Length: 184
Image (cartoon, rainbow, N blue to C red):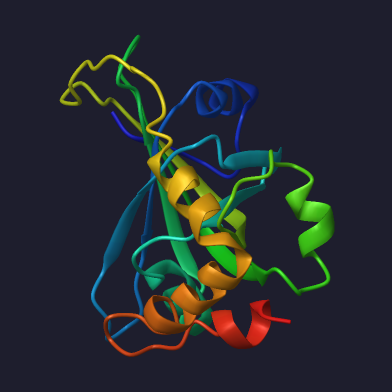
């Protein structure tokens, strides 16, 4: 049975710490709904009502465009081993770019990753748990490493060029401001 909470409990926080993957959902009133899988040890719980996660360069930038137009965000975790559980974090998010004043302090929560482009700061309004009994059991084999290798090969200049070509707007044409707010 689903249960709703106003903040994360210690049990929720410990569950989040053990997860290797999470999913982020965003949308605007008139955009496509976007759900993105995330991994690579990129999420930190700052307190029971706040999490931050590090966004690395990818083929698109839907989440950034959506959050800047409509701050609603849902982050979902599923237990793929152990006891079944689905944990959802509902709230409003902000995008922090490389040149924003909050970046240096928030980035210290993460190990440096090649291609880091934004940090999302989620103010949690509700936490929901549900059974998760329909989620399959799966074994974790390890990180792929492909995205880090790709970003290292591109280098800073190459990444900034890629952002200009592939990450400036959503598939619905919403701006991400990544070039204006991240380039020197």
